[in-house]
Image 1 (cartoon, rainbow, N blue to C red):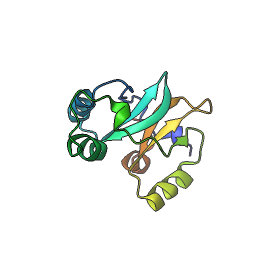
Image 2: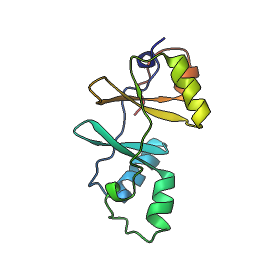
Image 3: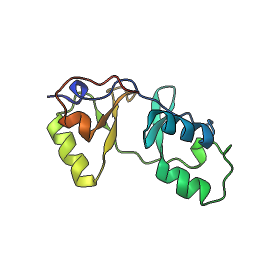
Image 4: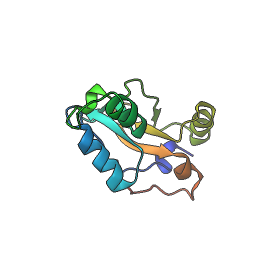
Length: 127
């Protein structure tokens, strides 16, 4: 089975110049712990609750600080046409709970979470 068959297709994203307050509010609204950061559908990073706490709040940054200043820049990802069993194995080995999914043009097309991979295999529409 391919990643595209299990990934969540509707993805809430953050933008580089968006405030960390806005990113935190989106995470709270959708009850999620991370947002891919995109510029023109291209993945340039991810912002997590960990980033907000350590690089934002603990570092004394303003809630108006742009996401780009606190996001994690090195992001693991997978491709939508990869074998899901292999990707899940890698996720578990690296201790990752979610992974951005890109097409071969390196545009963000979804998110794969371990629960998505374990669920009956139908794509999720949850943002």
